[in-house]
Image 1 (cartoon, rainbow, N blue to C red):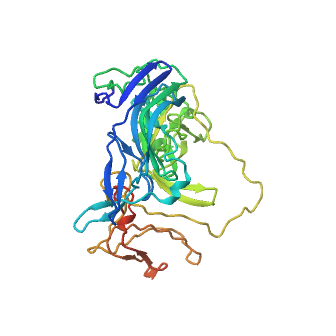
Image 2: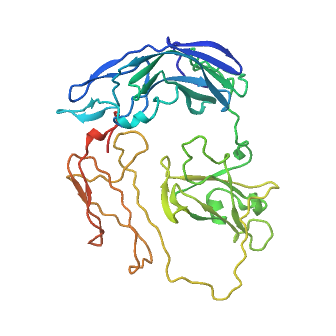
Image 3: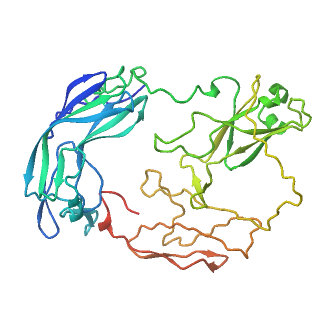
Length: 449
């Protein structure tokens, strides 16, 4: 079931024509400009229109406004064409730039406008494009995209602003649309609660889930390492070793503990992946005897990744869970995915290093400054608690060898703060000085840390 809101047709948008392979829309913006002043009293015009969204940008850059239009796409292959455009060029314009934000005497921030910086005069017109399709992705079985229409363009070299009175845009689809019309959201025909499955759904890349048939057992782990499935493990899980049948039929599935990439176009597992495992069948009879066992390597939501480009290790955490899940099944005539065998060296007296590099990290997700989003911080230091002790074990640490420390501090304060780190009462490096915040550097209305 898809739940949505019925929207009224936007008065500035009109569907001129539509068929299974194309959509033509007309946009007639209703302009509402605002007169603003700089800190020295000079007047500027903030150009805009009803229903406009604004792209973020640094202070001094042009204020780029666009009309967002939600479109239902039959596929990811499409083309955009600006069929026609009627416009007026406004001469001797003084367009306002993205403002800086200044702290008020009491509370809050106020915008301080100014002229667009000269460095943007090298481009003939900003923004360069008048139409674009962005944010294409799947939602509730539909492939949606946001058509952006840019009716306002700035030309510093000509000292003018181009305002489109009318824009006609055509979207051509590589594949015919056989379901919900592409203009459904434009016409206020968005699906609402109580409807059945959507007429058009995205073809699933993953095969049918392996969990659909057979008996499955869920295993949870919080640390990376080699895990052992033996008779004792099976007994505690309520599994009879005799019910397994062939020990080689044991199969393990899971995608590790790392979170999926945020980019919907990035590579990701095609459903649950089978994990390689090592079967140790002591007498080779194929049954799960008391002294037999199975080994597999499990990856936790916290761990390390190697970067070959600079030959360094970086830790990762999963922002959504502290537990990785694996699934166990057995039985049937199939065989699980075996670990590849590597030949042992035939040389006597193998290399035995005196020491090796180890790794340790601490990242506690305890404080969320803005009570939203994925940005979590660790322990809070303030006037009542300015010291925290971290006790960590690193067995076999060789104190005569160099140690690399990496720290990350975050400060939100109107004063200059200093952090110092000690190990066993000895300072590590110079003090870390966090200077007070210049709120005038804030771009747009955002929180700052």
